[in-house]
Image (cartoon, rainbow, N blue to C red):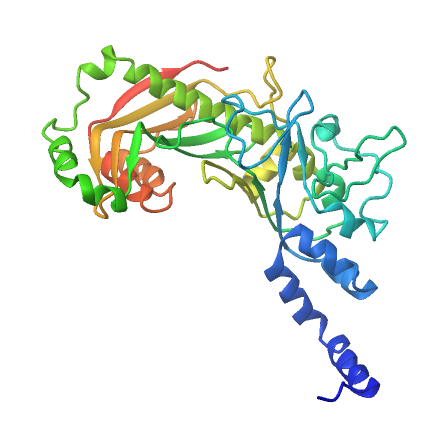
Length: 374
């Protein structure tokens, strides 16, 4: 087989360079991932200029560094219930982006009132190709620096390597929260154990006996005496602390990127999702958050809680949730929605099959509680 001639290579190069900017921007927006975009920047000055105009950016975190400097990856489940987020390492980002001095040049001074939190997050290499400072330590860069020259980000998603809540493999924990300058709402779905259809088949008779719904939607007395209610309160508080810690970390990024329409901070485990839309983002810029005096997180306001519970919940696809619990929380001073509208919001917070579980639970008896600010 003959090798391509120099002329053929030149023609191919011309065709590649001849792609219109609009098509390249479409491709870069489909890519989204910051690491891949950083590598694209190293190809040419034209690519560098276009990458900085993308509207859709995804940042996947490889490692979380706790306050004592120890790193935890996605497979580390031994950390405490609420992991520290205060420095986050984005492995593999630095090298491709360092080829462009403007990405990781000297940190620009921030005119924002949020600048005090920028040192809480750091970006570095964890792929064995680290850069070292003069003292021999690994050089880290804040996510604010990595994103600072993206001029037109509208949709930003940040994915942590794992959820903050250290739970057993069989335990279900899902939460979704919305924030402005403070918590707007949070919904938590939990279960003491989950059996999926592939496991369900071999023990079907046992689960059928346990999941007979003859309680009329009421919570059994044993729920109060065997620690069941206390455990659900702990789940709810843990979810709220995790959500408020995530919210606290986003201040500088929100302040610096005023083109944002949507910001989502999630994790690879699918444990929790923090969402902010354009109105909520603007609310935080206008009205700074109130920080908790006890830790680096947003203060959680006094809340009204609504709880639904089923000792055993069998879903149409065969998934079985034992001790299924759904809790929705809203600030006490927020206008209470009608039951139907509130039920739709709660049921729509989760992906399947857990969305179905939420819809089944909200049809049961509702129990109301209150929680003080913390």
